Every structure is written in C-alpha cells, then in structure tokens.
Length: 338
Image (tube, rainbow, N blue to C red):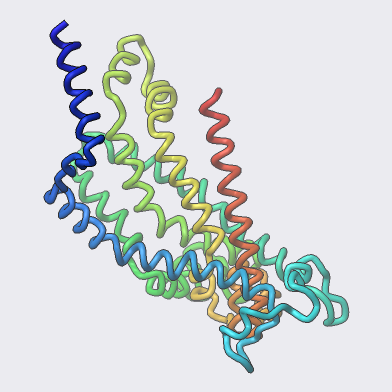
C-alpha cells in the first residue's frame, strides 16, 4: 500500500510541475562517452569521406556518364553529365549485345569474349582454397616452426604485384627457369590454355598466404570439446575434420569465396604485366585470347577515348559482380535453412 501511495504522490507531483509550466531538469551529457565518440569519428572520418567520394559518388557519376557520348575530347566532364547520347541513353548498353559486321556495329564479341577469359581465371579460386585449407590444417597442428611457415607463405601476399608479375614473366618466358624445367612455352607463342594457366598459377601463389592466415584463424576457433567427444565416440581424423571442423569454419570459407570472386572478376594487373602487350585500342586488346574484361575496358577508355562507353562497361561488370554475390548469399541462406 505504501508503494502505491508513493507512486500516486510522485505522479501527482509530475502533473503539478507540468501544469505550472516548470520543465523537468535535462539529463546531463556524459562527457566521457561524447569524447570517446568524437575520437571514434575522427579515426574513421577519412575512411568515410574517401569511401563516399571515391566509391558512392564516383559510381553515381559513372552511371550518369554511361548515358552520354562523352569521349574526353571537347567539352568538359561536368557538361557531359547533363547530356544524353544522340542515339538514346542506353546506346552503349545495347552495343554490348550487337555483333560487329564488316568493322561496323556493336562489340558483343569483345565483351563476352573477354568476360569468358575472366571467368576462366576464376578457376584459380577453388584451387587456391583447397591448397590453403590443406596447408592451414598442417599449420594449425602443434609442430615446430609453424609460425615461420606462416610468415613464409604470407610474403607473396604483401609483395608488390608488379614485382611478382615481372618475376613470373622471367620464370615462364622462353629460356626461363620454369619454362626450361617443364620444357614448355607459356608466354609468347604459347597456346591460350598455357598462357591462362600461367596467370592462374600466379594468382593462386600470390593469394595463398592470405587465405591460409584466415583458415588458420578459423581452425583455431573450433570448439575442441566437440572434437574430443567425436574422438571418444570412435571418429577418425578425417571424420572429425569433415563433420566437426568444416561446419565451424564455414563462415570463413564463405567469406573467402565471396571476396575472391569479387576480386577475380576485376583481374587486370597480372595479365597486363605478364604479357605486356596491351597498348592498343579496345578492339585490338580484346582480340588477344588472354585479355580479361577489365583489360577491354582499359583499352576503350585509354586508347579509344570513349569514356562513356567505358563507363557503361564498368557498370555492367558491377551488375554482374552484384548478381554473383547475391547468388552466393542466396545459396548460403538456403544452406542455413536446411
């Protein structure tokens, strides 16, 4: 009864204060928390500004530019953003589905030919993931010099792409160490399969260390009590790994797969540096069997000076990557439901 009386009195007091027009006291600002939040925003400010300007705003401007016929010659970039291509806003997008006839027409064979080359390079993703998982299992065990091996495998990841590509071109070129050991031709005069295989080996070797580090971290986070229980029940090492450890490191595997596909669809630097003959226009670049899709975009932008055309190609690539990512997340959510 006393509690009820107290609540009634306090409630009537609040009503009396409100009726008299007296405002309740403001809550004091927690200066320590405000100071902490300000420092947090200060640390991420450059990242937020850079991402906003160079990713989101740039993407919007690229979409707007793809509807124009801007070539980078005559008129300013900002004036071009407010125009539309004389043949229609979606002219460059339609060109991607039109074949070229007698040197006139669309660029379907260039677009989808280079896209096929890009997809071929993605073969290195499952190869690299399997190798990384194998080495990470070995390194996660209590063996001598495991830390040293982790450093050795991670060195290619932090090395310059330019230096690695130049080293690769010397090793696989005619007279190079690996070419002589295997008695094969990988670069000039080689078959398309040999040239692409050279790039796949390069990307697998360069990305192996980073994937190993992620898989080792995932394996170290596995609940060992589950493994011990399975061992007591008579499960062998393979059964423990496949049925206990693999499901627990699946989030790491999924992360590596998604990021690898996104990066693989944008491959450009390695083939360009290894083959080193991509100075021509878009069409001449695209006719080379080892050219990825981004290489064709580079030729259209840099040599043909068709900025609007290159923007449209870039938007299409972004859409394809977005769709592939959505498919992977859809398959992942379906797996979780099962």
